[in-house]
Structure formats: structure tokens, C-alpha cells
Image (cartoon, rainbow, N blue to C red; front, top):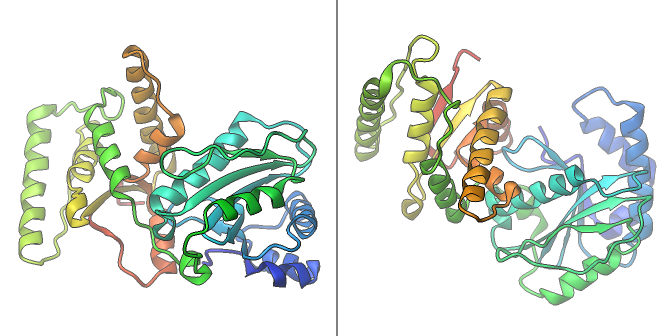
Length: 340
């Protein structure tokens, strides 16, 4: 399973026949190729060839961020800057959902893509039929910019401005492309604080009671500690009727076995995709509600990104393991609903 459908230097991309590029995209596409997707690629390639002339760098089409389960339409690596580009061919307006989407891509790169941790990341939403917005670069504290909204006419200007402003060590495109999944210490700390403050009642209905849940968690934690101290591998099976608190026990273990000082990570995995989304959204909404009650505001994109560090889809975990020969960064892995 390839991290990207197409990769080349910008000079090669500009020279290469469009049909050859489209062929590479089609070969790597994992699903039946619908006409809408094919036409979107044709439009993207044609426009990018027009907009990216005379630029240096590397272009990747349909790049998959490790473990995140979604592909970025276009990534341009130019100088020391990463540009994450989402295309909406034919779109006349900049929809909030599309702005959130490209911002999610940027945050996932910053928080989980090892070679992007210290890089400037510029998310760009291109709505080809929309009016041109101001292309100013406004930065957050973590060197991720607010999404740039453009119809594409300012794309070259945005790239030139960012790479000139941040003239650091150039990105090695091969190292960046195959970078491993690795959460930043700050995202782990934020996730721990987020989970410790949760009051979400619907995460798990624990009819077994707090005592049974605490005993189960303590017993597994003791096994984990013994395995860690003796360089052993251990596997534990937790069974119980629906509502016994198995999921909550797994979440508690996944969040409690993070140690950023020792680069020790843990993760809660489920093959139930809807469950993963429900758990993430429940914690995100709960944080937003708490912030509102306290008279403050929170960024839902960033809060949702924090939950991804310890609640993940097992299929994405598997796909990442097949792509990379490196061992996963986690030392504690919780498989929820393991029969899946």
C-alpha cells in the first residue's frame, strides 16, 4: 500500500505528459475509478501545471498521512515548507467543512508525521470557481498557518512567499515521504489533559461498577509494569458482558501509559470505525462544552487532533505497519473488539 499515488520533482511534473500522471494515479487507486474522480484529477493536473511553473520542489499527489486514514490531494515540498493542498474543482464557495478538512490535514502532519514536527505547514484550500481571497499568511504558535483560501491564481505567490520567509534547512523529500507515525510530546500531554477532564457519560455504560473497573485496570497495569521492567511481551484478555466497562478500561489504560520523557506511547485501537469516531467526537464536544461553561473558547480541530493520538482505527494501524518496516512507536496497544 503506497503512501502516495504519484511523486516527482516539480520540474519533472511540469515536463511529464498528463496522461502518464493520470495513469499513475489510476494504477494506485484502491477503489473502482469513477468518472467524477477521473475528471477531478484531470482538472487538478492541468491547473497545477499552469500554476506551478518556474518553482522548485517536490510534488506528491494523493499522499496518505500515516495512521490517519485519509489522503491529501496535493502536497508540495518547497524549501523548508510543507504545503498541504485540498482541491475543490468547480466549487464556487469556501465551505466551512472544506476549510476544516484542510486544517485537519495540516494538524495531522504537525502532530503525527515525524518529519513535519518542526516544519512550517501551510494548508491551502483551492476552490477553482470561487472569488480570490486575501493570501496573507497568518501563523499559529506551532508554525501552522491559518488555511489559505484561493481559486488557485495566487498559489505560486503563496509558495514563494512562505519559502522565502522561512529559509531553513531544506526538506529531504525521500525522508519526508516515508516518515513514520510519531505523536509529538505536546499532543500527548494535551490528550492526557483532555481525557483527565472528561465528563462524558456515554463513553461506556459501566454496570459492573467502579470497583471492578479499577481492579481490572490495576491488574493490567501491574502486568505492563512487570513486562517493561523485564523486557518481556505480554498479552491480556479482558472479557465481560456488554456494558461491563471493557472499552472504558481500555481507554484508561491507553491514556495512562504515556510517558513523553521516555518516548513511551500507548494507543487504543478498534476495528469498529463508527465507535472510533463517536469516542473522538464525544471527547471533543465535551471539551467545547466545558470551555463554554468556563467562559473560554476551544479550537475543535485541535481538540479532535488530540484524541487521534490515543484513539485510532485498527485498519489504519495495520496499513501503516505494512508500509513501514520500523516497529510502531507504541509500547502498549489496546485492541478493543478484538474479534474484528
